[in-house]
Image 1 (spheres, rainbow, N blue to C red):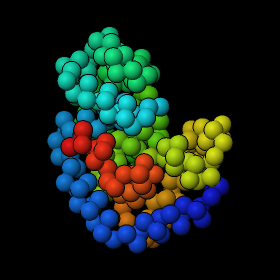
Image 2 (cartoon, helix red, strand yellow):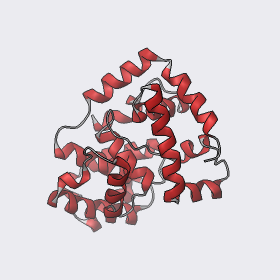
Image 3 (spheres, rainbow, N blue to C red):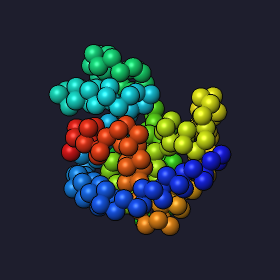
Length: 222
């Protein structure tokens, strides 16, 4: 972990925005999924987000929403994803098809329970072809926004932690040890500041995108 003090400064600044935090808590609590179907949709959204800008993530997800009957067929799904031009078609289609089958067999495996959320996330990641630490965390953030004790350390977050060189950033993001170290720091700092680690990241990320809330992308999973 290269730059914890900068991260702490950002989180302290966010923690002072009480009205913003209150509104984010209200919104994300309102759209927290209660049905297995909606939990699965958020995982699909996360699969589509791998190495993909948020705008393409949204457009490809909307395309799949119109073709839900194709999610269990790799060939048909790959063809649909190619229409989206979001990239990584083979990996995404293979991952989504496998996930759909695994989720139908045991949906509870893909949820968070009391205990070590990081360890639970790592087990889920190992079951999800094509999802790494960050994107598995992202799926869980969307499913459990007010309670998840994991965080999606995407490329922007890694830069915040001081990994400005792309090669170093890729190494840090794929290293379980480094990832857990940064994640635990984020979780501990958020706990100290009494803010959900997921909500804190959402606020920070949306500000970076020059947006006042998450709805510019999250409306598709509502």
